[in-house]
Structure formats: C-alpha cells, structure tokens
Length: 486
Image (tube, rainbow, N blue to C red; front, side):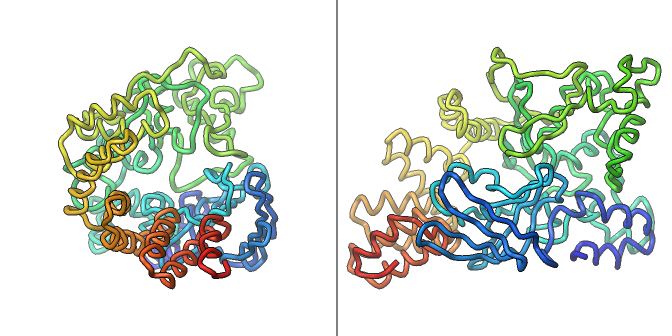
C-alpha cells in the first residue's frame, strides 16, 4: 500500500469506505509508487546501442555494452500497468528514467519511449516535476493520484463534513469541470504557463486557462494518437459537437471505478445508449460492444507496443490522409491565448515542425519579453549563427534568474570562446550542481579545466560524466589522454 492509500485510509475512508475501496484498483490510484516485492526478471537487447539490460528480482537493472558494465537500483514506477510501466532510479538527489520499460499489452520489456535510436547507454533522462504532477500527487514519485487532485484541498471539508466544502467536479461550471480532467489528459502540441498565472499549481475548481495556454493544430491528423490525445479527440467528435457541455469525460468514465475486462463492453455500451437508444446500431457484431467499431484502438505516434482508444468516435474507422496538413496553432481552451503564450506555443511546436520555425521566430520578436521568451529567442539566434544576440539574451536571463541551466550553459560557451575561461568554468559548475546529468556541459567543463591546468578537477568531471553516460567515448578518450583509466 503506497503513501497515497495510507493517507486515504486515515482520512477519507471512514466516511467514504466504498469509494475508497473501488478507487484503490483504478489506474489513477496505481499511477506511481514504490517498487516492492520481487520483480519479474527480464532481459532487453537494445538494437541501436548494442547494450544489454537485465532486470533482476531485486529490481536492480544491470547494463552492459562491450567492456562497460554497471547497474542501477530501480526504486519507483510510473504508470498504472494498464498500458505499461516505466521505472525510476535516484542519483545525486535527482530522479531519472530507466532506459527500459514493461509493456502490458505486448507482454514484454523493451526500450523505453524516447530512448529508441540512442547509440549509448542513456542514464541521463531527468524526471521533471511536470511528470510527477500527473502521475503522482505532487513532485514526489510515490503515491498515485490522490483524492485532492480532483476534489481540491480537503482540510475544510474534513473539519466541517459539509459537501459544500469540497469540490465536486460534476457540479462545477463546464469550463471548470473539464479543467479537472484536462490538467493531465490534454497535452496538445504545446502547453505554456501563462504570464499572469495564479500562485501555485492548478487545483480542482480553478480555471485551467488561468494557469496554462494549450495549443493544438487547426487541422487534426486522422489516425495519429498519443497517450494524452483523448481529450482533444473527444472535442472533435460529432457526439461532443452535438451534445455541447452535456458530454464530458465523466459521461462515460467513473473516476472512482474501472470496469473489469469482462464487463467493459456492456459498461460502456450503457453510456452510449443513454443518448443513442432511439436509434440502435444496425450491426449485429456491435450490438454488445459499441467501442469496437466506433472507438477503435490505434497505434500511437510515439510509443511502440501500445494502442490507445480513438475518442473522436468516428462512424467508420478512419485512416490517415496525406492531404491533411498542419497549418497553424489554435488555442484549445475557451479563453483566448495572449501574444506571449502564442509565440511560446509556436516555439515549442517548431522543435518538431520546421515549417513553423520562421513564424515562431517572428512572433517571439514581437512578444512581451520575459525569461521564457528570451530563452527561446536566444536558441533561435544561436541556431542562426547570431552569437552576439544570443549571448546578450543569455546574460539578461542569468541576471534575472541565475538558476536558469540552459542560459548559464550557453553563456559559458560564449564566454570561453572569448577567452573568459574562469567565468565559463564557474557557470558550468553552478549549472551542473542543479542539473548534474548534462553530459555535454560536463564534457565542456572538463576540457576547460584541463586546458587551464586543473588536471585533477578535469578527471573528476569526466568520471562524473561517465556515471550518467557510462560508455560516452569522448569522456573516456580524454581521460586516457590525461593519463587516467576510464
């Protein structure tokens, strides 16, 4: 039993025992936790790097690539297991994702999403607070999603026992109700924190648009699904467009309970028939399972071995069309997005869509300046070879926000090019204390230390780099040049 359930048992269960009991078995309640018991032994061969990963019964992940060997203790999991699970390990006070995951539907272990095609053993993917905000109750890796994520802070309700002192999503206005689900189940193309966002993170009952601007393409691509595209797909369905605010996630899903596999077809058919009873489906095969035809599962664009349900509810199964193109971003939430948020949305989209890079740069130049806008502009100037402009922006960012790792690291590069080695070393060292797994930055630091005569410090930096990327050949080569053994 995770910390979440201990909390629920002590606080919520005395008044809501049946709900708590049901909720314990849901995917949300099981979305993260501490690894306990014996692990299922597994071996994964990564075809890209040639590395072999072995998961032992004590949750230790051993890795091997040629002469390079090592291990990490997997201490936490992320994911309910309905689709799969990823695993986390700790290093130097930070959390990192393991390069192998388990996939429930395929019944196998394989390379984790996003690790495909890597040529080295990757132990550097930091688990950001945003990941834990949706998979856990806060920025800590265990406990699943708590009652307060959907019902808001419970202290007042506990003290009074009054229903009015707790958020009941179904009784909120449509925009506030839908925000409870969208906070985690709507990613879109880009999520941008608003400049005037309220203090703290989103809480049930807030307007999500007070915290985030969320952008999607103005033309959807049929057949393209992701783990968090359900919400926007539903919005594009004829069912939603005909029903308006009446239809929401809670129309079909009970967040306190998940139907067993044997009852799923009937459970969801009842939801469909609440609107479609007057015009039953003519296909006999679909008489007991509406979703098999009208909400087919499809492959995702980013995760192998996984299929997700198409919530656009097509009357007939659809396939991707080459004629569909991405033209522009639009704000998904009802509140209009500001000039700053739109520019940042385009900047995020431009990372994977070269066609919008020019528009992103032009919008950033016109947007109100803050650290987020300047950081994106600095990257654009750097890619365009305009180092003086990029350096000036990085200097402004570091003056405002000294703990900004990307700006500090890039500023260090500009300064060392101009002979300001001591300043560059100080910037790299400070940034790596905050984000220790940035192998490239640590390599630059080691080179700078070596050239400035600080051989022992250079070797220490290289060995630290190899803790996070054990087979990183440039680090091993420089260690040998310095007369040390990798």
